[in-house]
Image (tube, rainbow, N blue to C red; front, side, top):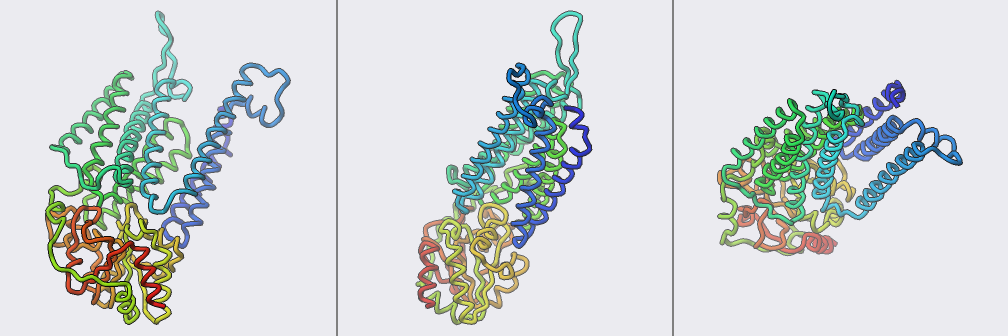
Length: 500
């Protein structure tokens, strides 16, 4: 349907779709406008999908859909008719899976769901690239050469070879890396870094090998070099992510998001699909920018993130796993009394709050404190939880007012003037070891200075556990800290009862 693809209305539809995606990203930059941003994203994707179908469906199938089936259709027409409904059935199946997953998934499992979706994008790019390599003529990226002797063969355009190999390499890295991220986030693998000997040299060697075999494929179109790049890319994605510790996992999620976007953009060039190019470039660039912002928030090198293995170099965390020091235990009644007498309470949520699903009762506690005349604020660390914005999403779900939620740089100076810091399920992002212990896996990461508050109330299941990075927190043992050992939701419920 070349005349449809060249139709200016198709270009206009893709342009509108791209504008919707830009508006979606703008809306998602703020909790207040995130729902509107999601709607723009869905509208843009619907326009892109419908336009792509119309562009690539054969004319005979369009005629069938617009009129009626002939009594005795030609074989080619029936084949086209079946093909479009196979596509629609696949779309329907995917939509059904997406709807069921979205309705059933817990907010606590959102990070691993995002990682799983990234892996699907990566694998889709790999499969499209393989399909294009196996039948390049159908994709319009090759010329058929008929030799004097022998069978005709397809010669893939040079630029298409580059696009194809880039798409398959980035897609394979995204897939295997996202699978490892999913396993770590889901608890199937430990959160501690798995440090392979000479891993940086291995990663660099793998990257150089991919570049070399990419060059060979560009020169010869040899299937062996193509599939070698695929295999090496799968291995490199595994090697890049497995050394990264749990404390750095939010940056990994953001980085893999960027990779998935670039993979989609590369496949967009292969498929000559403007919408995929625009969407992939937007996702890739926005993911890269977010990764850079998060690296700054964690005092990490952006190049180190791309190279992989930027977690702990040593085993400092294991050595500090247990500290045999005295600590003070408090009750819900103690916490209720201290907070009700305070002028300002800063609440610091973490992944423990998410696991206990305590965000709703936490908001109820804050409402009761405000009724007592207490000023309540929420302090959010950029990497609290296990994906970017994890805590913001949970608090928004509980209808916490947006003007009470503050990022680290906006509220850190207020801890010293606050009566109570109420830490619920956060460990690594409040750990002073990030500033003092050079052997710690979180060293250099900016933290929330909760220890500067007059009183620190720390909600934790037990003293035996450590944070996701595998290190203990010195704040537990300070004179101004009171440990509230219990399930986060149950403890906050008891505090609400004590507040009356």
